[in-house]
Length: 351
Ligand SMILES: *Cc1c(COP(=O)(O)O)cnc(C)c1O
Image (tube, protein in one colour):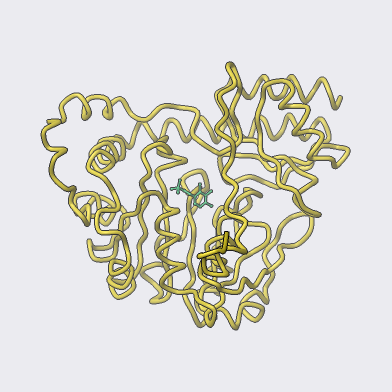
């Protein structure tokens, strides 16, 4: 059959999402979900919800949520846009700021969705390599990115878990003549964040998601903060009702229970550092993680074999092929029991 697709779409491989397998008793540590359920306030909100309301459209702007996030970030409602997950917000930004004449610059390795979204736009990707070994950020990144219209900083970075120093981020924002998109999917697991840079610079967008620290990957909710002109522009190209009524309902109930969330995050950070120390004793090479996962290279440097060994033993982690990434596996921090099982299996193989 003849293809009716645009050539960009025919050439596209498509994004490979982490597996969501249906294997019983599998320990699933491959997509950086939270091991703890959302706040008990969510169940209460659902029980009290008047189902008849579902016949109406939701608030297209999710203003109640915007006001909550705005207050938390010290900005106003018109500095905030809500997304159906932050992948939705990323799609909006690629539609808005990239084209065949408007390249995007990304660090390598980082989130593998970015090049897929660029390909959909027919936009060129300028790749800026992080340093081998410690994944440090190059001082000359802005020069390399000069032809791009958007530069993406994932902070903390995925899949490495590392953190671009804030002063360097600030320098990139000041020196880069284009949009700087700071993807803060994992910021709640780090010791600082760059939310204030969205107020400090006209060209900066900071993005957050409910999928990781808020235990709500199933709900699809995220938000972005930037100056009002950028938010207005993004509003023009979002789907009218991009966040449904139930997502707005449970998102609000969950987000407002801050003390519960803070406890879950503290437990994950504690267990992350414990597992990292134990794996380092086995000879694993692990860059310091500021997120809810570890990027860990086994002593023999064969990430693929390590991935396969864990999978045979019903533990699913993530493996990224490639000259640099192929040395590592990425392990999401689970419950203490799940982490213990990972350590037990890896001790049996590598000590
Ligand atoms: C998980 C993740 C996202 C996507 O979040 P959703 O809100 O689930 O779409 C975005 N960026 C990075 C770096 C992520 O790891």
